[in-house]
Length: 180
Image (cartoon, rainbow, N blue to C red; front, side, top):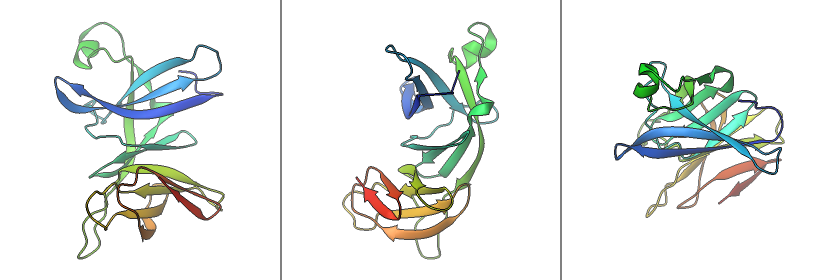
């Protein structure tokens, strides 16, 4: 996969044998009139599929940060993408996926004393700050306790804010929060 130039990435999940457990990212090369794309299966170090919703991702350098709703944030490094042979035992075990991306790290959802753990419904990057930071938030319906947080890349929350019900995404640009 050539990741130089115009590339878009989307995270998604799809059922395997009727169970919604296979998370993927799709890289779309935008340089030509007919975009090319590659589906990349997210896997654990032991090649088991990453079994999360993968509701959103952020991209910084070679790292992809994937929202894991109840688990926190997962980190993947695109330099670790491996091509899977289309034939043989490994291809059959992995359901003939062409590419795999093993998880390189993560940050578990934290629970402050007396509070529930943060849900990671989406992630994005802060723009315009001195250092890149992750923005994450919770989709919550029928309640007024949704939260937004800002965190160092790969680290704990710096600050946590209340957010509106049913948020779908958020970003921070030059200190201003934008929430959908």
